[in-house]
Image (tube, rainbow, N blue to C red; front, side, top):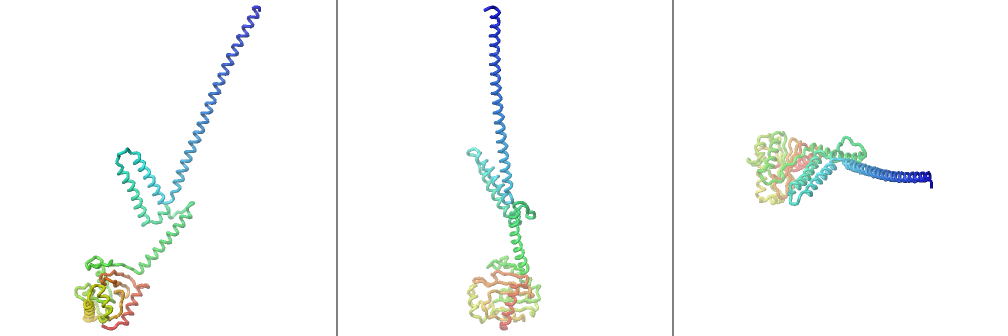
Length: 344
């Protein structure tokens, strides 16, 4: 091999080695680049996946909150939600506290919260029952409008019924006195006596139906004695039990723990008072279920004779007007008994 050939061979080997090195370097570069691209692509994909999952979770959380808020359609559900949240917070605090820590205050708070809710709902149900079912009873829109309208319609019907009852009661003017008080010095007994005294003082016409009137007006110590003495006797009509009605006297005297003679004596004392005051008095011979006071043919007071109570210890019902079916029935009853009774 000549020198020229050796020189050419060396150059070829050198070029070949250089090409090999460049090829290896390029291949390593390409491989590294591909690895980096793959890693970046994987990281980007994972990041995008995480972002998508995070967005989904946030969306689910928002939707869940929206659903919870949307479920609050009236004060009752709102109160329930507040109690549940507060109970959850207090319960979490109680659980997270160290062993041996006094949880009395938290438990008391939970119980107090429940009690407060009951009180608030009770007050609203008493004063504004309609507001328990819808937040604004005057504006009823949305998907729940039909349901709320039905509730409001029923509530309105109930309110109208109550208004009619109150109107009827106002027309009758019904008052209730005395819860069967046996104590003659009780406030209720005193209220009855004062009410009847006031009626006698302001009335120009008085009608009384009673078994025996010794403790009502016949004796000087009775609460209506002086008031009736001062009245014009022609304005007064009295119906008393006939002292000869032996069976009725026996029943009533036994019911209140009197002897037959005591009861009969009270009747006779009442008759004597009417005669002395020149009051028109008649005697009936029937078992009347109540004693009755009518003033100016307009107002009536009724006390029923109970099995084991005297008339004074019985409850009394007062009617501001007898221009009603019930009131006029008492008026007719008095007139019917008076027309068939015999003079004293």
